[in-house]
Structures are given as structure tokens and as C-alpha cells.
Image 1 (cartoon, rainbow, N blue to C red):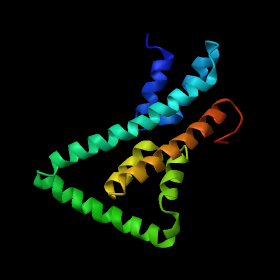
Image 2: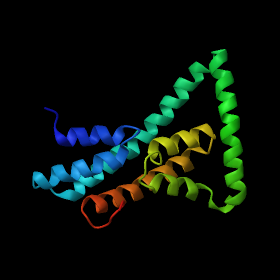
Image 3: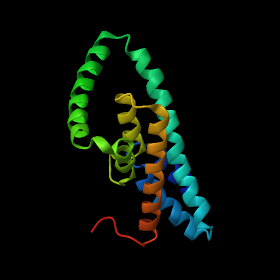
Length: 159
């Protein structure tokens, strides 16, 4: 049988569940096994932060290989054009937000707003890498704290 803490780590690095899936399971594991919560919480947040680096690396390597295929190249350029229109519209209304918008997007612990999506958006829009990583990891830290507090019953996320 798979260890509950290992399962929490796996959920934390997966694109759909991320902290929303891993944090409650990890906290439950810590409480059941009488472990100190802070190291467990920090570990889950750290795993979700580290995945950002691997996503960027994977996207860079995978994408450059796929661009050699005509179908992918055409699809990518069309998709990028559509995304760019939406982003330009958003930026024109929220120009001063900059990387704060990326941080807040990642910080909201809802489906499709975590580190995976934030990293993909930053990569797709070719945002400055170092600033993007800092913004995304800050968002992960905020989401981690929110999820830890929610998992411990201090705040309610859903009615």
C-alpha cells in the first residue's frame, strides 16, 4: 500500500490536483501520525515550487523538438495568436499589475490556477523567466498557506 505522505507529494506535483490535493492529505497524515505540521506543510509547498523548474525545462526541450513538425508549428502559432489577443486585452486594462497578476493567479487555490498553469502561461507568453519563477513561487507559497489553513479548519474555501 502506498504511503499517504508519498501520495500527498505525488498529488502536489500533478497538474490537476497540486496543493489542493496534496496539502489536505499531508496534513491528515501528520495529524494521524502525531508529526509536527510545519515541516510537512513546508515540504508540500516546496515540492509544488520545485515542479515549476521542471515544467519550464520540459516545455523548453519538448517544444523545440516539436517545432520541427509542420502541423505542430502551425497549431502552436495559431494558439499563441489566440492567447496573445486575450492577454493583450487583459494587459490593456490591468497594465500596472505586471507579475503581481501572475502571482495572484497562481495563489488562488482553484482548479487550473496553480503552478502548472501559471508556468505554462509565463512560458507561452515568453515572460521574463526569473521574474516569472519568483511570481509563480510566491503564488504557490500563498496558495500553500491558504490550503494549510483551510485543511486545518481555520478558513472555509467552499460553502
